[in-house]
Length: 353
Ligand SMILES: NC(=O)C1=CN([C@@H]2O[C@H](COP(=O)(O)OP(=O)(O)OC[C@H]3O[C@@H](n4cnc5c(N)ncnc54)[C@H](O)[C@@H]3O)[C@@H](O)[C@H]2O)C=CC1
Ligand SMILES: CC(C)CC(=O)C(=O)O
Ligand SMILES: [Mg+2]
Image (tube, rainbow, N blue to C red; front, side):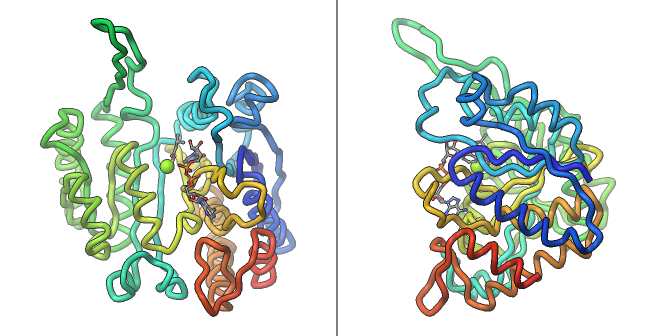
């Protein structure tokens, strides 16, 4: 297994270090892999002038899977847009055709009190958000800021082709088929033509999946339903921007964004694995970030790209154990539990493995 590791910026290096230690701890168990590190994001801009240097692109293309920390930070926010760290992330997703972003929001029972919702509303929560990742308003052309009638006008383009909608729809229907057989497609068809097409294609696709119950929800209602009665959802499928927003929202139902892993897959399950959160500049360098989302992303890597269910489940079980033993980083801390830093959380997971 050839794994490319791109720690990135902010808390990225701290959390990927712990995830890699967890992977290393499994090496003795028959896992055989090589790791090559590269630069992406702001650190890459500082070193090379580009947020996604050619050397990184080569490493990523040659790897079977990529583990990424996070990119971005205020020090790069005033750079020309092409040099911004976030462009590096968009570029790697696009270049590797990683169109299917899977973001599972699972509430560990041990974190029931950390959820923003009452325990009875979230107990047993297990949602999979399937987010399209290489299209939508994040990539559409034209985009920019232009002068018009003596003032600046900002514009972006929301665009999806039916083939793009169909391929992410298939991923979502297939996932629903293996789970609770319920798929909710989230759009804004009452206002946006682009998402009318989204809904039409989802309805057409549903003919191939008679065993999956398809429903539709407008995104504003979906945002509300997620915090009102989240257990009504099994699999949710939506576009790039709505999925970005709804997955951050869903993360709080599980206690913290520091708990939400993600897999970004191409059509052959080559994948980039990263936590759903960003570079958290407010806590970077302090050793307090929660590494569990990144550690759980490694479990997703073993499951989806390498088809290794046993070690993936072992990592998830180890995470469950450390939570049951009371280990908590600051974001999920509550009175009576044991507050630990990033490295101690990594140590605890390895001990539990
Ligand atoms: N995939 C990526 O690389 C992403 C990068 N970003 C970038 O990250 C930078 C910061 O963005 P924000 O909007 O602040 O979002 P963020 O997700 O980095 O942070 C939001 C809040 O969650 C907390 N948080 C995030 N991850 C945590 C963890 N593992 N443990 C404990 N607390 C955690 C942060 O401390 C902060 O208070 C920006 O430059 C943004 O563009 C944002 C989202 C995704
Ligand atoms: C930084 C963005 C490009 C991505 C983002 O917020 C995400 O993928 O969750
Ligand atoms: Mg996001």
